[in-house]
Amino acid sequence: MALSAGTRRTVACVLVGLGALLLVAALMIPTYTVSKMAKTPLDLEITTVAVNQKDQESLVLDSSSLTAAGRSAEVNKNVPLVSQRFLTVEDPSDADEMTIQAGNTLRRIDKSGDTGVLTAYVDRVTIDRVSGEPVAADPNGSIAITTNSKGEALADPVQHTGLQYRFPIGTEKKTYPYFDVLARTTTDMEFQEETEINGTKVYHFRQNVPVTNLNDVSKAPTNKLELPAAKWGVEGGEEPVTMYRFYGNTRDVWVEPETGTVVKGGEQLNIFYGRSADKVEVQALKANMVFDTDTVESQLAVAKDNIDKLSLFGRVLPIVFGILGVLALIGGIALGLTGGRGGYPARPAGPSGRRPSGGSSVAASEAPTTTLPRTGNADAPTETIKLPKNL
Image (cartoon, rainbow, N blue to C red; front, side):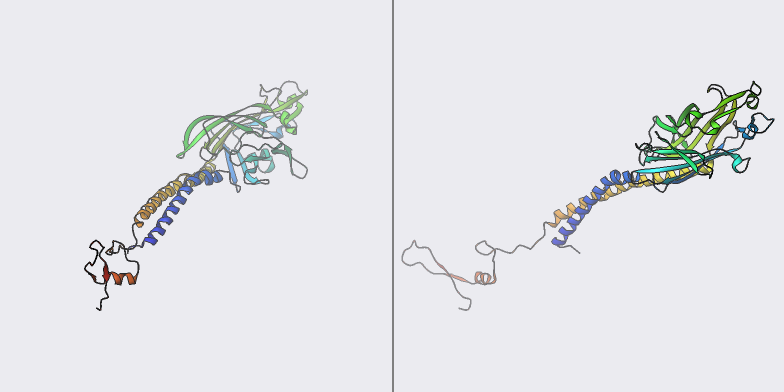
């Protein structure tokens, strides 16, 4: 059924308006919606587990050998280790900033309870939700590595700089500053290569943390010990010898670049006691800790879910809305142009060439006429008289 001219014009206006709206949406979604989505979620809750690589050294100092009578420092070999980190979002957090709290433990699983715990700390830092960088406030975080008599963590205010738990949206192949909790210092995290993990593209980065005297970082009791030389296993008998706890690390991370998700991580830990940084006298810990398979798969799932969301709002919807918007505009314009040619049909003109305007005029125009002969002045104009029909 054909549409009337008025209906066609209405439909054309609706199509043009809808097309314009869809085109605006296609332009706004990538710039506005994606920017709102490209942030670390506030409901973040991640557990990562790393284990020592069985084909590499795993050395741990038996701490009981330092206190037991008649024993010197003993280093156990092939010790099974597990490192667990539980990461949550705490207050203060808002639309632009978030506070991340990470509790980390490293323990030997061949011993139970507290005797198996080798290191433990709680780290807090407030970061920008887009860049992942710590905010400018001073201090912007804290680190707790000791507890009081009640077992409560004693946190020291610490200014964090550089990345830690996530990389920025759209990670690039470049060097990033990266903060190390134990050394409390920031060094370069350098891009190594582009590779794949289970079919997902990732960027591999590496950080070398220089050997650091932990007693200069924190006055924890274990960072400086004075024991007889014989207890340390060095020359000097019962002569007291002061040893410092040193720490170095080579850290590797594999990052999904679109979302900044750390898919895989590894640390080559080297902690030892010595009188100087250039000589290992008693090895306290040496192991290569790498995310286990379950953690890698879990992090990959998180990355893929975020990739799908960014792709939907960043590419798919803008393309669909753009195509529909163009089609609606074309349809509306075409319908508007053809709809303007409708209207009332033309009426025949009367004898004078003008269209009749009313009923009486039409009746008069249909009446017969008669022409009277001229009289008198031959040049006088003739006169047409309309006669009624009933004569």
